[in-house]
Image (cartoon, rainbow, N blue to C red):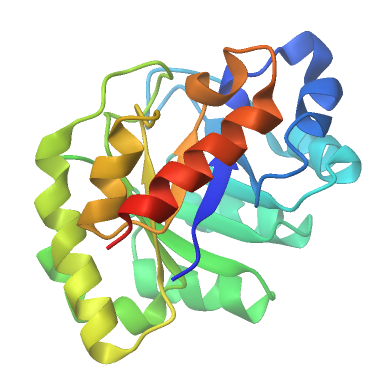
Length: 220
């Protein structure tokens, strides 16, 4: 099982965003948090900004839509050439139909679950998605503390993915640092979004390497 580290540029310096993205060129994907101040109480990047990030980034984009009406907007992010587009199950009218649309556009389709969202309705639908994002904080703001109580959900997903031999990435997002990444890796995650723990130091690329090593050493 490969380990992927996707730094969230929500924790980067917005004035020097291109510089900060260049400092994580050893990461697997750039995680771009799209918030609409409706589905979550915060407002961040939009389509135009994401297009520019796509143009300057040395690595592909992992777009996370924390927005209402993802059916309207998700295909536009796929059209930009994003490697992966993840939308929230709680916001989608038909998660399977939207995932199929994204896949038809050549983009990896992901579904995200809030900490309080039950995973059971999606267990029989795993083949329809390329990745499942288990939120380990309430979506909307960076810098929150990791919610270890979400780990049983992750273990359920890992057990089924392995049992069925599926190529479905299991991603975690929220409060991921050098300690909690070990917990999430042991529970079955293989893809890790990290913001503050990457960009808070003087050498983000070194932080990416350190996080990857810790996850690899504790992976399920």
